[in-house]
Image 1 (cartoon, one colour):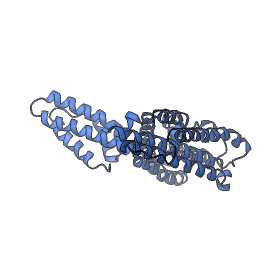
Image 2 (cartoon, one colour):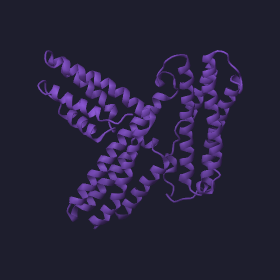
Image 3 (cartoon, helix red, strand yellow):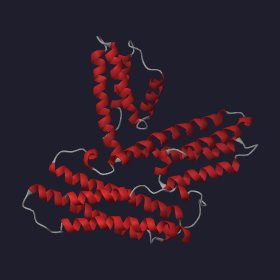
Length: 342
C-alpha cells in the first residue's frame, strides 16, 4: 500500500497543470495543425505514461481477484482496485477523444481535452489514496492526499480572482451605460487594462483552455473597436454577453474541494463568532480580537456568496467598534448560515 501511495504521489506531481501561456498567441480560430501536435504530443504521451505506470504498480502489488480474509485489507484492496479500474477507463476515453475529428480540428479543443483529463486523473488518484487510507484510520484529505494543498490553493485563487473579474465587468458595464459619448473610448481602454491585469494573475494559468479562448476572443474584439469615435452601443453590445460568460465562473463553487474547505472554514468562523457574543458584554478587547480572527478567516470564503463578499470588503475597510461588534457578529453569523454548502 505504501508503494502504491508513493507511486500515486509521483504521478500527481508529474500530472500538474499544463503551462498554456505559449499557446495563447496563436490565432483563436486556428486549427490543430502539425506544429501543435508536435508540441502537445509529448504532454499526451507523458500523461498516458504516468497513469499507466501507476496502474502497473497497482497490479503488481494488488493483483486483481486476490482474496483477503482481513476486513480492512479487503476494503483497502477494493478502494485501490476501484481507482485502477477508473484510471484505465479514463485512459481509454482520452484515447477516443484525441481521435475525434471535432477535437483534432480545433487546437483549443485539443488542449482543453488534455487539460481536463489531467485534472481528472489527479482527482481519481487523490481519491484512491484518501479512500484507501481512510480504511486504516479517520483522516482528512489534506493529511493524506498528495497535491491536495496545491489543488486547494489553485481553486481558491481562481475563485477569488474570477469573483473580482465579475465585479469589475459588471461595474464597467454600468459605467458604459451611464457615460457621456466622449468618455466611451476611455472606458474601453480601462476595460482592456482590467483584462490585461487579470491575464497577469496566478489564477490565469489555471483557467480552463476553453474559457481562456473566450476571454482572448473578447479581448481581440475589444481591440478592434477600441478607436476614437467608438459608440456606446457598440461597446455595450460587446460587453453584455461577456458579463454573462464571466458570471459562469461562479460554478467553481461546486467543486468538491471547495465545498469541503468552505464547510470547515465556516464552522471555524462560527466558533469564533460565538466567542464574540460571549465576551462582548464583559471583555470588549477579547471580543474585538475574536471578531478580527473570524473576519480574517472569512477571506478564504471570498467568492462563495455576493452578500458575504460585500460584507467582507466593507467590514475590512471599516471594522466595527467595541459597541458595534456584537451586532456585526450577528449579521456575520446570519450570512454564514445562508451559505449553500451541502
